Length: 238
Image (cartoon, rainbow, N blue to C red; front, side):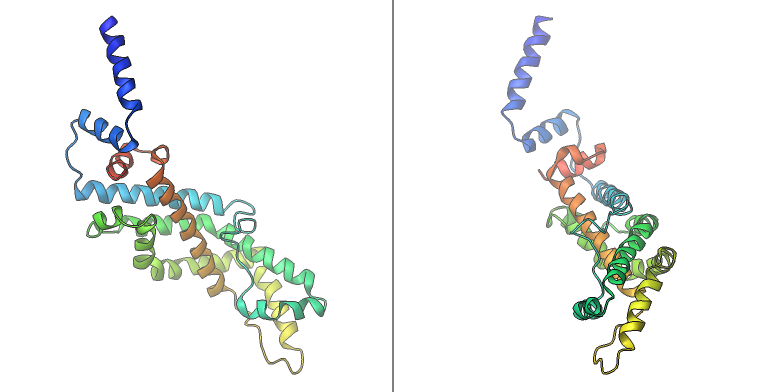
């Protein structure tokens, strides 16, 4: 009993003087684990990305998940922003505000629909760049995912965005603003009433930002690594 207590005290003293990297190496050594394999690195990165998109989609799909998050809030399209002051001067201020809210509500409603699309893309990633990603920038995995899947994600996500925009009235509200403004004589700049492509791109951009945040969190904070594999893969880099 005394030996066990003494050993535990010694162990605590040793671990308290170690860095997080030292603790990870000690634990890995004690578990008899060998060097990381490409398969483990690939699987660990996929787990981290899936965790990132799951948390990101859950966060974004809440009421005000886009609208009250300045990091990902979707503003009016650029052509409408250029003439926003004019729209408010001619009495369309409340309509502008309603359209802005509806646009973000549409993105929030569609965010959960993005989760299986992202996860499917994540699972198709190869292990070719696995070690480079692991040793790269804090958002290296997110950037790799974006480079290799964004075109496919936009194509698959657009129909979901259109359904959501129609359901919350964003298409109508914004279309009415565009039609009213475009009917003003001698206006040189016109507003494009089509929201789909714009909101799709902004919504996906917002989700990637949330994934990047979670990736950085997993890289920096051992407590954010929710599986043994993630702890092993990212712990090796601490």
